[in-house]
Length: 307
Image (cartoon, rainbow, N blue to C red):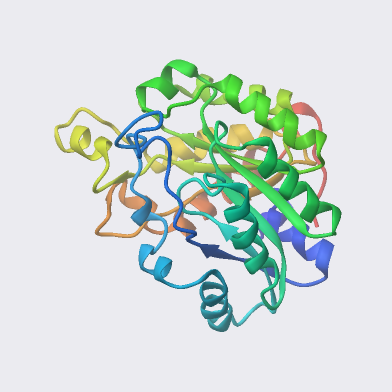
């Protein structure tokens, strides 16, 4: 598979920028979430169980120790991005954020930060801090979990924010020169393919630098798991996911970086769909779809051969 020939991938961008492979090292900063601690809600999003995407046991280690441990295990790269992934990684006082972010940036062979968070939890002070690192030449990405632009669906999945929150944060970040990567979920309850395409169009109209596509996972410990076990929650087939993701990628301008076009979760936490256990299954299928029906940007006449 040579996905970079049909998609403008984040990995290829980093290779071009730095002349070598750059890998993300995932971090757990011990952050919480306002949708869990009672600030705006309790229980979190209905699809959420963070244990499905990150090993929470690493939280006991310092930021520098987490990075050193993972870097030691990497054989194909000598430089890395520090990725604050778990929960809401801007949800703390700015002095706490500064301490954590700079501990990461001061670690050996770190070229920048990726900070995962919610659109409604990015105070101006946090954006100013990220802008400082960007001005110093670090690779800085603000990763916003939007999931969908449909406010009714956001409410149904107990997301706790709306699309306007996302628009405001993106506008502020981009005015400061901070690159934005937006996370979107395909397969949310009552969401159609047309809804997914509308979401993409709205995100693109706001201005965005990168995208991540995720299939909906049903994971143990989530509220959706209860509905799935009761037969009230369906999941997408691999074919349906590939069809929707392929069309979204074809509608995306070629300058937008795709940080991810699918995702996986680990069993026994993963309950459904089974094909999400191995992300190569969907990656290969999407690659085939794009080669057959057109590469990124082809649906809008903006396709070129990616390097």
